[in-house]
Image 1 (tube, rainbow, N blue to C red):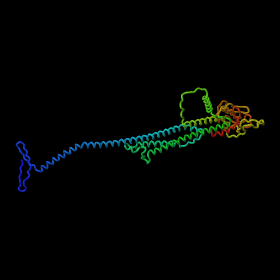
Image 2: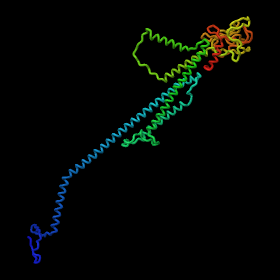
Image 3: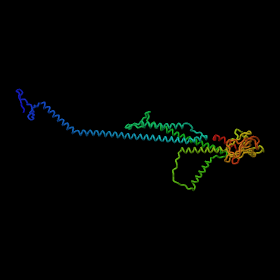
Image 4: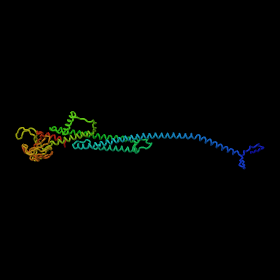
Length: 444
């Protein structure tokens, strides 16, 4: 129990609280001081505050966690949206790159096909050009331009392929593709973009290939025109002699065309399913035209070489021409059926064209004579020979020696009598000699 004491000065003193702790027979007394009360109250207040704080945390934690998760969800959603946008942009850029690359590859493929076609054409044209040169036709495109243009085109295509490889090698990877496409990027070796350089190369190669194609067509057209002109000139010159050198092939084609027209309009039955006509390339048609012109020229030249257009006694003067003249033995007008050449006895007499010997020996006023059949109704006679070097049935070449000049037969002196007969009738040999001089530029 508590006790109190007083003071005469200050009055009655406040009694201190005493705690009595009893355990069995043991009793303990403890006086509660003010500071002890203050400490107890402080501890109680701390516990109360801690309890309230814990309770508040537990109450607000769910809201904080929910808010944090919501923020994280929004951030993740925004990030995924950004990734999706970047991926879509990358896909668009990649698709554009693939499309650009596909376009470039298609262009390169077309250029390669054009170059291969032109190379193939050059091979086809080569044999015809050789034939044309053998025929004496001047080739206007016989220079190194076409070879240089082929090399330039090849180099351009290789440069384009290198640019394609450079674009693929330097293309940015990942999200960076969204900001740069390979074919629009700057070339590391220059300031221009790869697309600009590729476009210039495409233009240059295309021009080179077009120039090659144009040059080939011009060469074909020029050679065809030259062959046709030469053939027409030869036929015109030969026609003045009274002969025709139209190739048998042309006659056969004319006959075939006529027969075809008769078949189309006749009663012959025709039928079958419709099939579209074959498309013929212009270049191939030009090649056929050139080949036809060369064949015609070669055939005409072949026919001309069979005819007596050369001189039987080169470097010899003509002493008497074809036509009416005073007969040296009778002194009256008579037909001189040939021309006479002033030649010394023993001079070689040569055949003016290839043919077969039909007469070789003594023949009336001709004395020793050689007659050659050249075909197509054309024969030549060589009279007054001192020596005959061939026999009947021999086949001789143009320019081959067939005898030696003399003064046999009806002759007033050493000379060569030369005749040309067409279907048995004598014609002026000068027509053939003059035609031979004009034909020399087309035949030789």
